[in-house]
Length: 218
Image 1 (cartoon, rainbow, N blue to C red):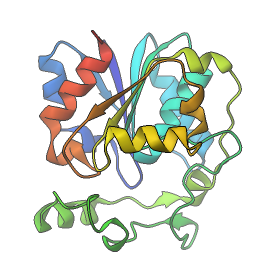
Image 2: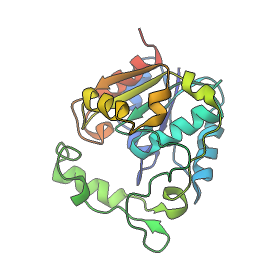
Image 3: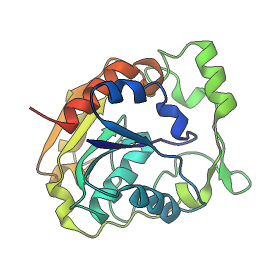
Image 4: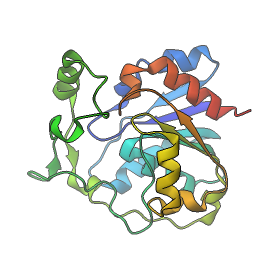
């Protein structure tokens, strides 16, 4: 199956480099995306342009919302949506207004906001590589307003990959109303992954196995 891989904030398509051969070896066609443009609509347009046939759409972190926007825009082509370490925002919510804007962009804020389980499995060399490669995100992306229109998105199978949090925690957040989109989704499964927030760097083989399972669930 074709698997679109959408990177989270500050990342480009190279973030998935270690996952690609693992997916290819399992018989899939992974397509890592680098998102161009200065607005959320630009990023969504890039995802939809890559969605040329039935595909599993994977979003990391904030890009979970982009994967869900793709399911909303093309429910007939999105065979499944996978959220890695993140959850989709609901209609009317800003895409990812979590960090300060400087000169029209959101630079990587350093590691302090990610102290603890998010970054515990990244050694100093990995952190240095991440920081050096981090791409500031246009404020027009992070502040873009999410618009969801087609309720057929709730029929799309969803897999929530739980790295720095547990499946039980994810279920609790959904039940508490913190993730209204997933409360309405009809087919949601949870996959545990013992890693920090960036498993594509620290657990690529394990992440690929979970994505392959989401592409062909039992």
